[in-house]
Length: 216
View 1 (cartoon, rainbow, N blue to C red):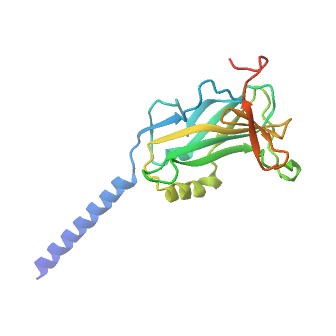
View 2: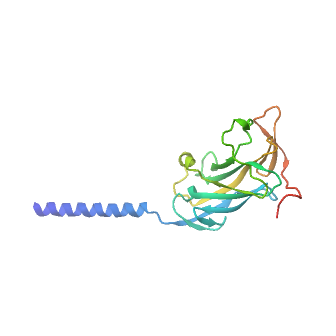
């Protein structure tokens, strides 16, 4: 009986050790190949801001080229955007696009990264701690904020996006102008605030950088 008990205890301890080692192997996720891709856009699309660098943590990455990253790598994303227009920029929004499972209501779950005052906010004087406008030639960084991590996690869970994300797409969604609060750039188009419905912007044509502005 004593020999059987000792044998049982030995088997139990061995099982616990194996379980612990297995759990440790799962918890310490190795880095895998990841990739960032720009969302497809209309040919010839112009924008008053351009993404000049992308980083994951301290690692600079090139869109479209695979790089090594651990689980949750997209939470450490930072985009540097430069104002290549002749106008001060009061708002810029970059979207992170996560592919949803087949049969989902939307093709992508989108998490926004924002700087400045949203053009839909009409009374800017009511906005506390107003961000400084990005002047022509200046740059600004957009990153996943600590305060938004819970909402990002909830978004992905609600959309059914699996925890192990290998690919994320990105795009500049919207840009607001300091000197004309009724004008907005969106996906390559100039949008003008609707006089009858101030909460709506209507497309007035493709956005074009003037000859005095920096396309080079």
